[in-house]
Length: 113
Length: 112
Image (tube, chains in turn green, cyan):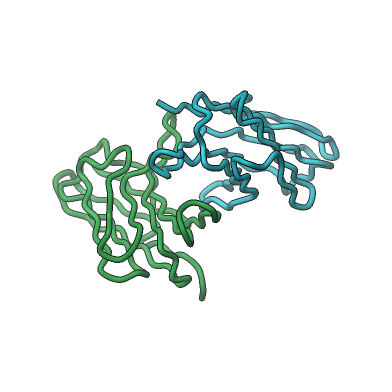
């Protein structure tokens, strides 16, 4: 199916573990984004990518790593999960990052215990 | 630093009413402004995108306006329906770094 999909939808992990959230889009959009959504903070940009092999930091990048070896995939890795990284994570894509609307995945609810 | 504010945080109105949601931003150097809808447990759906050179955009019963100089946007929903119940978020795309800065949202409940 065309669209943007995230996996897993729900994840519980322990403090200190590495966890990877997956994002896949079928539109060949150039831009992809990772946001986290927390009560009281709204959505905040973690990392974004303008194209394969091009990534850049957003507002809250500490503790996260991204890669984009293929246009359609943009995984987000928490190298050593902390409780403060408990959040809902959204992946998004857009054709050119500026003039066109952004499309969002369903989100991954991550709980770090 | 850009700040985006949405007032009210929550709104409950009877079905059929016309309503206005507000979004304000502190830095007028924006590239565009987008309105999104978020349903519980789901992702965000883009509703309208207004370029900084535009004054308004319309889609069905939705109309969004933009007054860049005063740092304000409104989302007008005509003839509200229970299916319009959701959280509405506005976001501005900055001229400087093309990053979206988000408001906290307005939670809208339409009572049948």
